[in-house]
Length: 93
Image 1 (tube, rainbow, N blue to C red):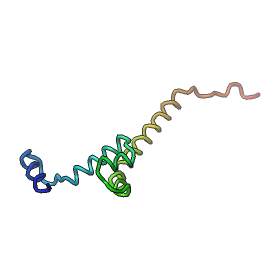
Image 2: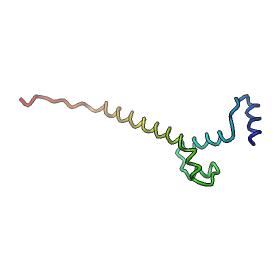
Image 3: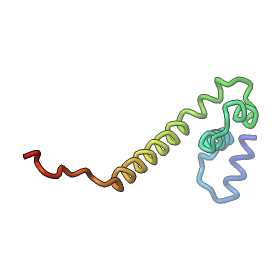
């Protein structure tokens, strides 16, 4: 299959280096980013253990968590900017 993959990518005019393993890894990353459970990923990728899934999911999980964290921070700042600021009126004099 590896040789056929090389042949097909060559026929498609794609640069060298695209492999079945890379395709599988990319698919695993997409599954992680889409929120698939580890068990779903295991079954969809054909792995026999969850340990194998973890290797594929590491990079994608970091990306997803970073994006989610950034969104939450932006939402926090947007809400904070909309709140009226309290002013001290009178100086207690």
